[in-house]
Image 1 (cartoon, rainbow, N blue to C red):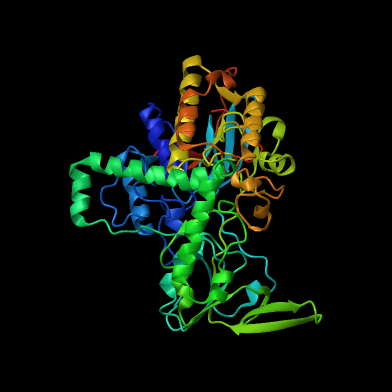
Image 2: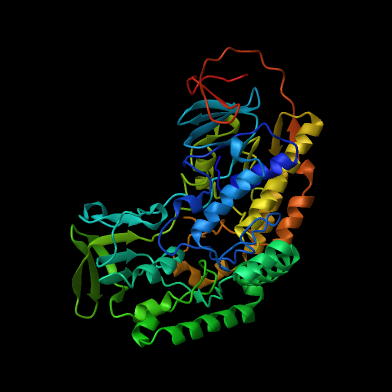
Length: 527
C-alpha cells in the first residue's frame, strides 16, 4: 500500500527475492509519494541527493547537490520502470480498511475500487502523507485562495499579491525565498522558529555528471562523504544528543553565526532564534531563507493568531501589566498553509482502520497504549503485516536507509515463510517487548530527553509526550539489524486448506493480474 519510494523499494527487493505475485496500491495517479504531491515553489530534498537515493541505483544526473523536487519525481518513475515495478502498481486505488481473516491467514482489503484478498500486507504509506491543517477559528471563511504546501495548486497567482504564510518549518523554509521577490507583501506567521544550518547547495556541472556516469566509483565516494555528514547531523545530533553535548553545542553555535550573518535586524534575529535544543524538531539547510526576512516587503509575525477573516488574519498581543489585548488585522489576497503533516496519531499510523488478531484495531490500540513495534516494522497485533514507516523506524542519514533496511527485513521473513511452508508470520510478543525496552532505554540519550523540547512543537512527538517517530540507532546499526535479526523472533504457522468459494469479479487493473471482487466487507474471501 503506497507507491512512493518505500513501496517502489520494497517492490524491487521482492523481485530480487524471486517474488513477483504482488500488487502495489496507490491512491494517487502516479508513483512518487511525497514527491508526486509536493510541487510548491522551491521544493527540494533537504539531504544531499547522493545520499537521498537508493544505494544500488545512483543517479549521476542530479542538477544540484540538493536536487529539486521534479528530479526526485522523475527518479521515482525511473526506478519503478527500470526494476520492473511499474506493472505491479495500481494507481487511483485508495485503501480504505483492512481486516485479517485468521481462519484462512489472509487479509481482506477494502479499496476505492472494490475488495481484494492478500496473504501478506505491507503499509508503505509514507510518514509525511496527510497534510496537517491548523486549528484556527474562521480558517474556511477566507475569501481568497487557500493552499497547503503539500497539495499545491499551481494555478494560484502569487505575483503582486499580499501573501500570508502560516508556518516556518522545512517546507516554508524552501517556499519563502522563492515567492518573496514577486509578492507585493509577504507576511510570515511563526509559532516556533527552526534551526537553520548553512547549505552547501552547489550546482553539479555537466562535466561532473559525465564523470559520475562513466566512473561510478566517484559518485560512490561522494555518497560516502555526504552520508557521513548527514549521519553526524541527523543521527549524532538527535539519537546520540545527550552523549555528545559538545558536538551539539558546536552545531548550535554554527547555526547562530549563520543567523547573525544573514539577518541584519536584531529584533528579527531574536524572533528567529530557537529556544529549544537542536534536534528537538528536524533542523534544515538553507542559505536563502533567513535573508528573506531582511526584505522590505517581508514581515515576520510571532503574535498569536486569533482568527482568520474573509479578508485576512487577526493576531493578538496581550499586555499583562495593563490587562489589555491589542488586535491587529492584516489583509491578504492569498493564504498559504505551510503547516506540515500529521504524523504519530490516530488515523495516520496506520492511515486507515487495520484490524488484526481478535478484531483489534491497531491504530486505536496504539493510540491508547502508546506506539510500539518490533524493529520499527511489525507488531504482534497484526499477523502477516509489516509497516515500512512504522513507529520507532526512522534512523540513518536519509529515509532511504529505512526503506532498504525495511525491505530487507520483510524479504527475509517472506523467504523464511516460503522455506517453512508457512501461511502466517507474526512476531513473538517476547521479542517485541525486548525490542521496545531497548528503544526506550536508548531514548533517554536522545535530543527528545531535553526539557526544552516541550515547547518545540515537533512532529516527532505523539500526544503522550513520547517520540516514537525516530529509532535511536545509527545508520550502520539499522542496516546490521535488518540483516541479522533472529528469524525465530517470528512464529510461523500453516493454515488448513480452505474450501473453495465462488466470487464474482468486476474489473481488471492495467498491466496486472490483480482482480477486485464484489463482496461485502463481511464476506470471507478464501480463493
